[in-house]
Length: 134
Image (cartoon, rainbow, N blue to C red; front, side):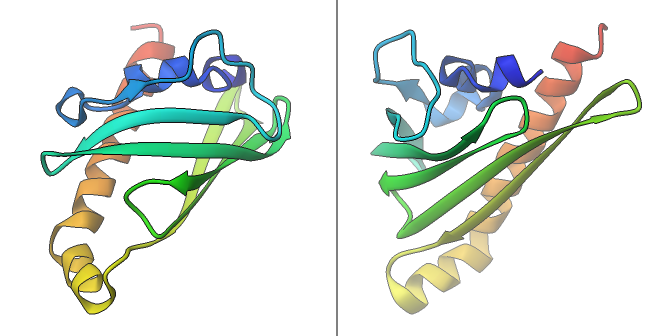
């Protein structure tokens, strides 16, 4: 399963279509420490250029992407993979901060937190469908 996730091109399959997610970095993208990956994404109808860097990469175990440019003032996303009961347990840990101080905190409580949960729940559904054999 790690092979699927170490190909950033597959991220489009795991992202709801209403976000208009597109990878700008030419394929194929080889995952390694220092790899820069550029995307565009629409958040609440606003198009953002998002650039991440892979800051940690341990084949078949984990990788970390950190935002260098994008909608958040800070974004650190750790993906870990563990063999479990004949399958793979995937864990995503995201640490992020929003810009705009108190306004960002209000926006977070009103809709951004819910939106992120929706995106990651969508990913779980797609992953389960893709890898369950159904």
